[in-house]
Image (cartoon, rainbow, N blue to C red; front, side, top):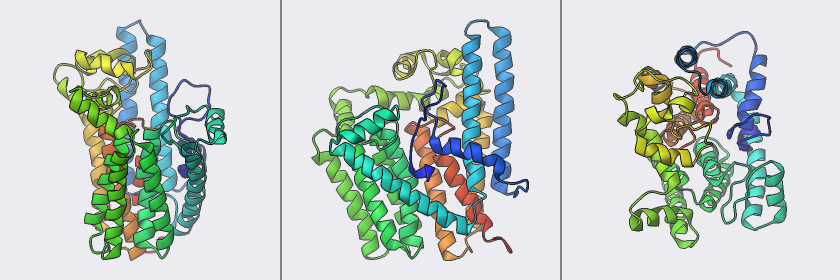
Length: 410
């Protein structure tokens, strides 16, 4: 149920913008999974990536402590925080990959109950109900007028939750299970809430997901079902233009008339491309280690981009708002390649499991699509923290689903 309650930052005495409730619960539950670990190609690739990042970051930290005396405490704190973030995300994958078919139905029931709760809060926000604002304030969350954010930190993170978790699950219910009515209701509700977030990143992710579904499930999406997807997405695009206080349109107008990006858009773009521009004029090829942006941000990216990124971050804890940029700058080319190996292994395993029963096969196919949509979102549209559960959730689902076709598997 925690995956459907996208509380992005729970109240802990730690200076961190992102502490997802779902990842914390998974971290606390991981020790109770049992001693027997099911080995799979995806697990092997994931552990190789994780061990490399941890060992690499520790070596980088020791080198920083040896060569500098300024900002040492902050550097150590940032390293510890990023290591914990990685372990939180890995815990989500470890828990989800161990669920079986029967447990997944309980998982879906929890998701449905959580999503219904979020819907009530979000529509209360849009309606201007004071109780919705008071609830967010009680959770330590900022109130956004004319944009809904549910229980998330901000509207863009709520949009990431809708397109990265709810809509893929709704698509599976609609296309791969007898509960088509439930999938349709959830998909329409998520689409409507996505409109009310006015998130440019959310709109792009929704486009990738819908186009991917039409291509991947072209044999299943026939007749009225295909037109349902097209009509829902067409209504979404129309509403983005029809509502005057549209945040998406603001981005477009700023680009057309001011001839430059908004600060938030520039932050995401520069975070993604900056480390590649400085690839051969810094140590980005080797990586500076987790949490190293507190000391080396000016070396990771060009100087003219540095000021823009600092504007959207805490001054003492700056970071890159792109998972792709962070992977390169903090883990080096080797880290990028190892993360790519995890994604490729998931793709290969999903292809090898094409003889699964239909219901499970559709879950794996949609899970793989959701995995790649979430990765692209984190690469180019923000949400770069390893603690964000979306990528690890779908990686675990693909791993679990692929295992279900093994002879004798529960």
